[in-house]
Amino acid sequence: MGSTRFADGSNFHIVLFPFMSKGHTIPLLHFAKILLRRSAAVTFVTTPANRPFITHSLADTAATIATLPFLSSPDIPASIESTDKLPSMSLFFQFALSTSSMQAPFEQLLQTLPRVSFMVTDAFLWWTLHSANKFSIPRFAHFGMSCYSVSLHLEARIQGILSGAQPENELNTLTRFPWIKLSKEDFDADLRKQNPNTPEHHFFANFSPTIPQSYGILVNSFYELEPTFVDHVNTHYSPKSWCVGPFCFAETTSSRKVDDSVKPNWMMWLDKRGREKRGVVYVAFGSQAEISREQVEEIAIGLEESRVCFLWVIRKEEWGLAEGFEERVKERGVVVREWVDQREILRHESVEGFVSHCGWNSVLESVCCGVPIVAWPMMAEQFLNARMVEEELGVGLRVERGDGFVKREEVRKKVRELMEGEKGTRVREKVRELADEARKAVEEGGSSWCTLNALLHHTRQYC
Ligand code: UDP
Ligand code: UDP
Image 1 (cartoon, rainbow, N blue to C red):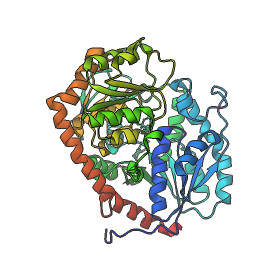
Image 2: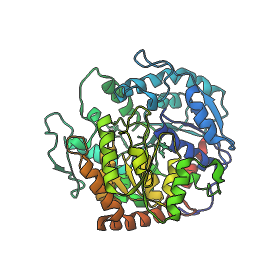
Image 3: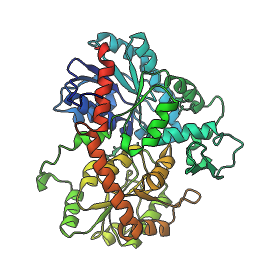
Image 4: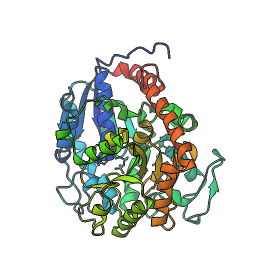
């Protein structure tokens, strides 16, 4: 690698364009800050409805924000510009296909911008590759997944585990990773379906060829977390996967002391638990998961019976919790119904466990904060992430999902095991070690630091 010195990005102008959802936008907002710190100029592309969140996050930075109109398909209400706001996730692929309505305005924008050194666009915005090619700009696809999930997906496909003939829950050993056994159930139903003429079929037909044709893949991960799988994708597939994360460390500067009068109630509640030296389990399932009313009620009973302190973020007002629940548990638990700063919660001294849907950002944020996980996957590649959390990284315990519904006894058992049991102690030690490694990776001279240096050197000719 030669020098590990600060790679000056001062001649660089980088276009960042996330897919329209919080889980895809937040990591690129963090990456923008990392690039700005290396003196690069950044243009961040979004749509009008997503702009306020982005403007808020990039306030006090030198990033430029560009807005493109988004024309959704007839099935999607016109005002919806983020998958977080879809009435149902069954519209996800229609929404993703609609993003190509932005191709012409995106190309008009590229014409007006100062020379672009490279662009990082979400892998789901497949059509940005065609725009990049027209302007001879290198395109990095931002893959919001681990190399572990990508490797397992690709291997499962090669071994025919995803094929129609394969029974749903039969465990298969992966030839290349003989310690891993998985079944079709480890994959989202949309990936298993092969039905032609469905939106998901059209989407994958567009998307799949654009990954190998891109200049590189930007991965929010770090080498030490998953060396076998980073090596695997880089040995067997091109283009190169560049692991330059975890991006969430870009925000750690907020060790600022916040005045109690501006703190949200739930933060004061956490502070109080901290003073009492009581451990709290944080319960949250990200910005997309759809959870039934019955399941919410079952979680409530499980948490109450666990007798563990908890902070639970639920997304929708209409999710009625049984009357009297919040009053009954108020000394031990708090329910929050607003957008929270998840990283702030995970960093809090009293938070010692996370019941998580295992979105990749949540897994990484938990690892970076040294908080062990009760893994409760719900969709997309979260089933693989949950496997990784328990089996590969040893930083958490998976819930038994049965036919998809998790019973109160299981919630109670896993939460207690994590917070008070022997297994909990083991995974807590492991996650703290990994948190140290994660921090080292992004520090000067660390693996992600050096990989970003190499990426900048590699693309310098396009400045
Ligand atoms: N998040 C947050 N506050 C919330 C809910 C989510 O800050 O109230 C953040 C969380 O920290 C993470 C992202 O939103 O960075 C969610 O991404 P993830 O991959 O975990 O799950 P998704 O929402 O995409 O399913
Ligand atoms: N791919 C890759 N590196 C990655 C992810 C994907 O090289 O990190 C390539 C791989 O060759 C795959 C293609 O991108 O065939 C499309 O990926 P996808 O997940 O859509 O798989 P597929 O549609 O082939 O099942």
